[in-house]
Length: 90
Ligand SMILES: [Zn+2]
Image (cartoon, rainbow, N blue to C red; front, side, top):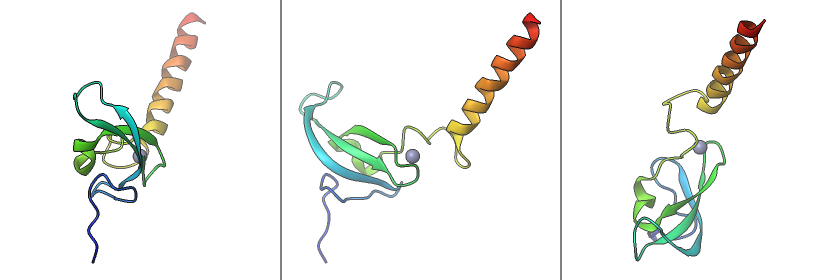
């Protein structure tokens, strides 16, 4: 059985993040590292990651909450704040 390297396109880590492609862009935070294009298997979010972080990488869009849909929750909080602000003016 062939083993995927963590930097191979198609590799999926234990957090459900799949390597789409090697971008070839150098990492700004880690000299010598290359940025890889990753996609979240849960929400489809596309983002870049250092090659050395792929195996432990979590989705930047969903990592804030263990369950549910955090971005929807944040949006709801934002709407509530906006609503309360409007109410305050009135
Ligand atoms: Zn996600």
